[in-house]
Image (cartoon, rainbow, N blue to C red):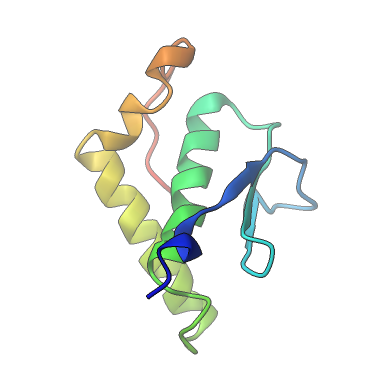
Length: 100
């Protein structure tokens, strides 16, 4: 197993339409739309990283299953408080919202 396969670069570029973020597996990039509040950006980042950790690049499963798995991972981290710790050094998480 290649330990570098989970290394990702995070970018902050606006997304089209209703898309909030995406993962480019080939380039190892996760993009988070910066137009959302910081709390939402953290949710988006965790959701996109969950796609990588759930091996959605290498598994041939329906998109609905990929999204459900990524949301479940993100929601679990949020519920145990791990996500709330991430932005604390940047001025804090201003709101707690459920992961969509």
